[in-house]
Length: 152
Image (cartoon, rainbow, N blue to C red; front, side, top):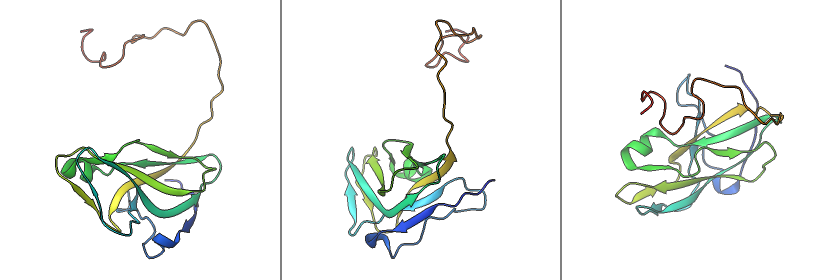
């Protein structure tokens, strides 16, 4: 694993919360915490922007991705709506997590709750090479469930 240093600023409403941590030695993502003042309830089908109380300065050439926590998704039907959410290296605002409740019961987001995970990754910049034709492959233009179906 490669390491990268990320400058972080705790905002006043998140100053008492711990910084995101990796849950295990081999975890890919850091757990983001809810920096809500009061418990927020997400009714079924409802979405909220949940603050984390953090802003960061990623090194150039990197991004952060905000992803759902599998436990919240499985147990409660709660996920990150714009998954993965992208934090660009030049963004300096607060990290917010757009949670949606796809479950059938109201879901409470309380202060300090682990609501999402964040992964920092290098960014690859592309250069377009426009053409009128693309090289052939066995798959061709097949998509949307076409692989592994025997052509059906």
